[in-house]
Image 1 (cartoon, rainbow, N blue to C red):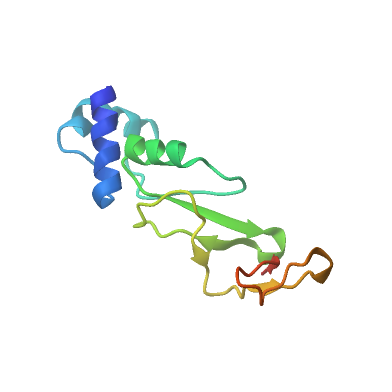
Image 2: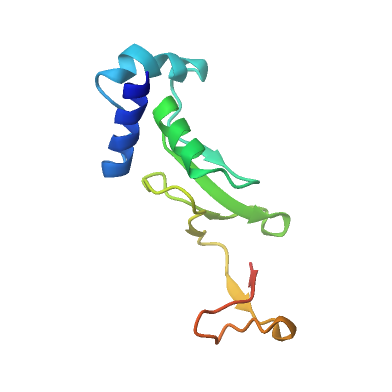
Length: 123
């Protein structure tokens, strides 16, 4: 089992592949079947998920998992990773219906004009 997980994680890191021709029929198709066997993509949000857990779930269920971020004020999702993005640990770019700006907070010396821009992210 460890060899199967290590091999699939390596394939994910190198090329973004969620499947493996040898290990899937033996091990991972059983996991896929727990969700009905026909999942094409999953989405997670509401709280950060660690990269290790996210990558494990991707290889376990043989499907891309998009991670998003949003607010009630933005009617849920404001940003979302691409299903084809093999890199975990970020929430992707803003959706096309969302405008994003960085608001200065002078009392904290957070300015969007600083060399490393800082401030409050507004959607």
